[in-house]
View: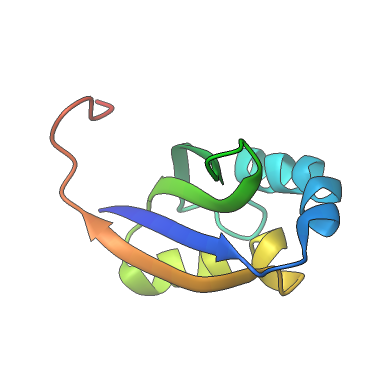
Length: 98
């Protein structure tokens, strides 16, 4: 099953967010502790001025619980930088990886 993880950054966390970019990239690439999760695509979301203000990730996981566990271990979540986080199942149609 595919899932979309969307989270907005908490206000005032821009510097911490920038410092975490390498940790986030490593986590998404290696998925430690989550061998059953496949990261497909995503990245930081931007405000009108081009400043990072959140994150969007599309993953494949065996269940909603597995997707939530993956989010719980995400560096931004562990650092407490995300606000208004949601995980939703995605019925991926166009451009779906095969």
